[in-house]
Image (cartoon, rainbow, N blue to C red; front, side):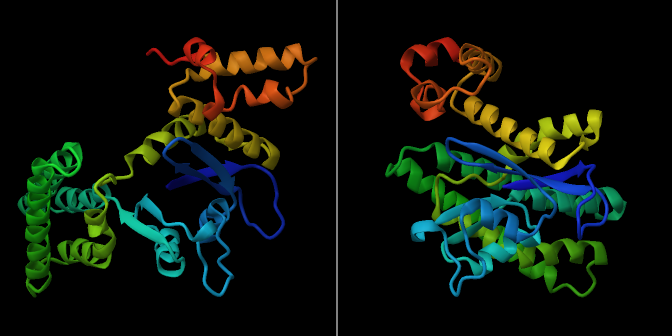
Amino acid sequence: MDETSWKVFEVTAGKAGYRWWCWIFVGHDTTAFVIKPGRGADVAAKHLGIDLNAKTPMLPGGATLLASSDFATCYQRLGREVEGFVNIYCWAHIRRYFIRAGDAHAFLKTWADAWVSLIAELFCAHRAWGTSASGSKEEALAFIKVQAVIDRIDATRIAQSADPDLFAAAKKVLATLNHEWDGLVAFLEYPDVGLENNAAERGLRRPVVIRKACYGSGSIWSAEFAANTWSILATAAKNHLNPLVYLKAYLNACAEAGGKAPQGATLERFFPWAVSEADQAAWADTS
């Protein structure tokens, strides 16, 4: 999950300004966008079917959700309050904190570079773990290496955090690392979960490029239309369909239906999880 700012140029009761937020939720076989006036936990909770006002907020059916994200407070709240919501925090984000500290203070460059190298070791070890056959000797050995790197990171952060002479900017980065530690190491229990939420950040790239050109949406309905359209096309792409070919086929079906949205089986033909072999071949993304 991730979010970025998006302007909606319509006066809204109770809201100052035009700053809204474009959210993305990338699942195993779907990608969903929503554009909402806020960036609080309530937005993600509503999308996920969670009632935050319940005595014990939980996911529908008592499910467990592994949520890869940055450290924004909205995700922290969901992890604290929602039963079954597991924060898997992004190591690429904490890496950036070290890089920024090194760039801002030349005398911290060596310190920051050492941390970046240590995190790089973690990514390499994690890749070996994730690509090993499940239950194999190679997987077991790879996990030992991942745990060893985490142990070194853990020992280093504890030792440096206790150093009274450490520069304030370095202490600030370590304070973030310490505060988010549980979420950063939660991946150890889930071999199939990545170390970063780059999929969500990449998914937001196209809306960000559009934002630079058009500044946002002129109305609430057009913002909702944009989010729905992006959701449909991104989900098609996630299911190995060419979005433009897929969209053209759908619009042709609308034309054949007299300029209206197709109904029944004609519509269901376009559900990515129900695409026939013939349509899969015709609409396939061959790039």
